[in-house]
Length: 527
Ligand code: ZN
Image (cartoon, rainbow, N blue to C red; front, side):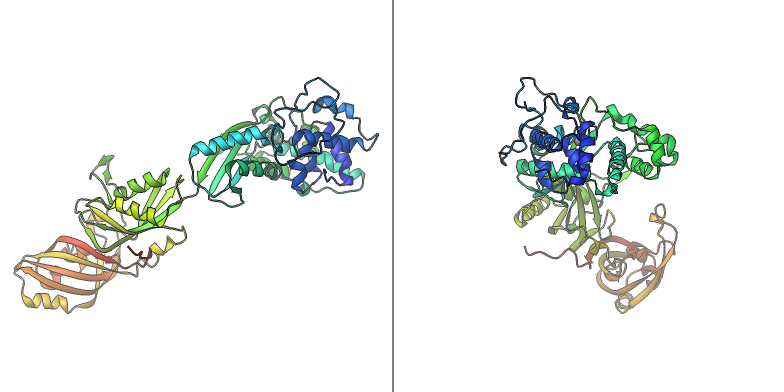
């Protein structure tokens, strides 16, 4: 059953006799049921012929034969089962009864062959092979299609003609009622791909299969639009052609019907070639992995340290973690982020610093808790870093890592040297200081990459442990974002007060460790 409403009969006749394929006829007759579109192509042609012939005098079928194939069918095929749907469609064109002539497939003037030759088993196999060889893990897929822009021009031309045809019967015809080519295409091809891949096509999936079509033979169809609607077609750097689908649709919205008629006549010519498949691309949405890291080395930057193209340190925290992640998730690239960062010579101890990594276009995504544990163990084979709480998280959850970063407290321990011999009272003075407000001008050492500013920070508490006459260990709890090294040595008076000014001597910091980063994310995992 074609399910064409009687009022569209003349539109069907008009389109079919001018070189449009039966599936485009269904689209323009606003058939919203998927069933007729999914009929094997040859059966659909026969059914449409039979349907149109049932209204004697309306159309001379002899006129249409060379546009589809020769000669007209006498019967629609009725015994269609799921098994042979989609097989041997237009690749093996039917011989209709009563002829020995092999039928010649013609390319539709509206879909340029997409609903004929590119929605059949052979093309689906091509898609399947491409997806298969790309080696992705997925549990469903979303299918997207990129169409040549001139399809909109051809469709617009057919719509104007169909509107006129409907007008003769006193009916209006809204362009929005036409079934979109993309939609009809998905109706046909979704079940076929799903059957091959063994998973469902859905409207939202992390895994996307994208097919890009082009049709160079008819690219010129759009060109007249640039003369009529100049401002719709502006050259941009990244685009190869100004005739993008967006621009063409915009121009068709603006153009006067008479202007269109004057430049582009109906029917559009049937092309000699079918749409080219420019690309079949597979991609997987980013996956996010989070955890906490400890850094035990004073010669290890957090991220690769490169000055003027020259590498300064052998490795980095980022690399020691991501090299294992990239190997396991088989991602294309990554983005590393963390809750703050430490200097190259600063260790990060305690429970570690939260970090998150975006893995772009990962091929492997289905990892179990056990897999993640093993991955963590692999990373922890390094003696320079350790990670914990390694887990897959959502993009949204990553926001927790940066939340309230400024308000959080951080704990440090430092080895301090003083010029003068340390007195007991000096250390007691520090021990008894609470909620000390300090003013810090941007440190000299970071001035090349941060603007000059003065900011207030709070040293919540300090605790000391004597080491010898000139050294002591200082434990600090501070507001996040405090420059600890500068608080110790004073940065030539740019941080006030500082350890030296409080103890009335010259002080310096020899070692610094981050003892804790108080961010409750990611959630701690049992080991
Ligand atoms: Zn078509």
